Length: 508
Image 1: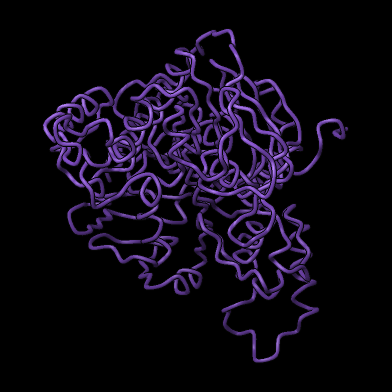
Image 2 (image 1 turned 60 degrees about the vertical axis):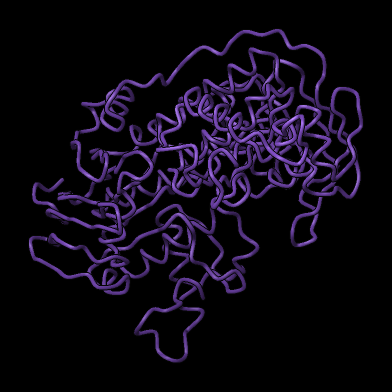
């Protein structure tokens, strides 16, 4: 590995209205290394990489490539210098073929593209880096992992030598993650360099050579991989020790709280997203649903809660069949719902914290002598108690929800949903986008309600989260349950196969 860096960012500063996203950040990348960029949500990681890729322009600072100062004005300009970025949300065109997506927008291709030559080059490139994908396939027919390969192959096709991967494993199965890591190792062995943004500490420790940690838009430090562990990285990210591993409360499951029988549900495109699915959860039990995003998890949660009408099947709560689209019946029956979209679905951004807290059970706050008027004083007192109990950072109970950070907004949702001590909790990606400190709070809160006797349906995209919280794991693929496993990391490979469509009995 060369001593001189292939890339340097010196004293980068970038401010947006009301916030300094990056403050005097310096970062260097050596030839032939994986350099991980770590930090809490909002620490400035993606902003810094967007500057490097030409999406944003820094207010201050300089960028050097192989010792020469460069000016990056656009993503196309960045590619000219050999810098490419695979963002969290893919930019492929579903109706185009793989080859068409790879050459889309590239200059120097001419008016007529030699399709067979391009396809042959892509096949060789994919084979060389263990990123196989059919260049003639339409993108809409491919898996999420294959779509990501297209993005990486496009950068390699353009000759990129510095590759930025922003949360690349967020939507991959364990097997797809291993394929990606294998390709990353081959890339760096051949002299390319990778900047790897992730919040998954185990992956950072597995794949990186060095780690730079950001906190509050500043660099906390850069360490060689062998000199750090999970605990030290968390301390750098958060500024304090966080309980990463803890024992789940040992509870003996009680009676069945939720029974879902032969449920079939359509998605927004009128296609079957949940297919003849059955499951049950007992009191004091957490059932984790593992699966790649988009395999029916959202439709399942919404059908159970009454937000989406099933084609067939039934939902039974404490031996009582629920009417398909009666959300009020669920609320009064003790069902809590923590949706994955806390801003668009779980809260009303323009309403105050107090109004958001009581929007589902305002009937409990009407004045006895005046059933058309709310007891605002009692609401304010109760909201203050919840703000204290759930450690919500806010200037006032009257603050609009839109001014809360992601972590504090999630705590607001938890306060509203869980303060009534529900018998069933549907938690859909409850920690998505949260920093480690907020994740720790969510974990402890859910486990406390499990110990109290609540039944919890946990729909999460991260296996470590499912292993950490669940008592049983069900794997979903294209709306069907492929099988069940214990919440044990030793079953990761088996779960990965089921996430890709193998029934448990079919796994060889």
